[in-house]
Length: 257
Image (cartoon, rainbow, N blue to C red; front, side, top):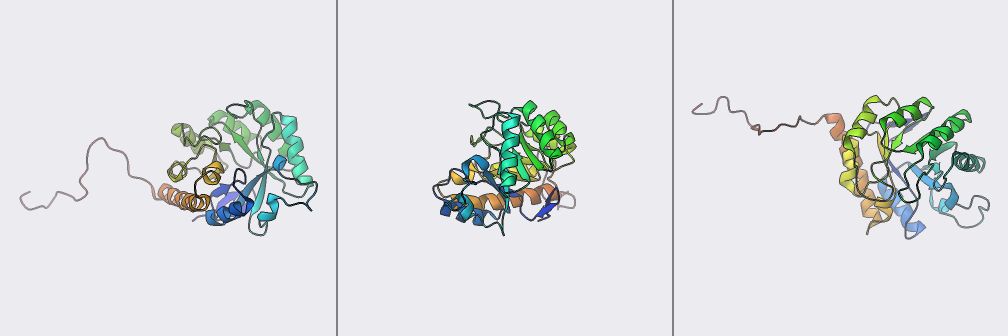
């Protein structure tokens, strides 16, 4: 597998996983191992970073093996997201941030105006910013111009499991982006992840699809294989779609022809 390069880091895995909704932290650790991921996102607001003497999900993440990607989940304003990112950095988690600024409580769609504002501030403040956004090519372009190290368009609403709803938009974003494109949110099963990669996405980020599965460890492995397969298929180049059949064996030279 060719490496995924974001900012100054190279990763052998193109699957990024989360830490929420698992039945237990021990099961989460097993799923992370099965996924082969090297980048793990953690909601800053769900972690007790003030008192590290108490048990935390961070105790189950081997930071020698995984790079932490703090996220600003639950933030509804640019100021809130900026403060949360700075808090994570001051606590020693990372200067990388998965930037989320939610604009609607029911759909959890991002507030792209506030997202752009927060991105500009955090980039100037020395953060490696990976913003979660809608599948809007114009917004993705503006985030890239603001200095984002990658753009992370949603495939479908967070936790919905609907799969990629707007295939063409993901293709357009990939065509014009000069930074990695990471499909974030909406993946429900392995075929969704494979499709994202076949469309040219550089990586897929998921949490609920693994954590909420009946067997999270088995699903994590399935996602690992599907991301690898989708990437290889994209690099190999699919055959063009045709309206009519084309014989697999040439008819020229057959007896009676």
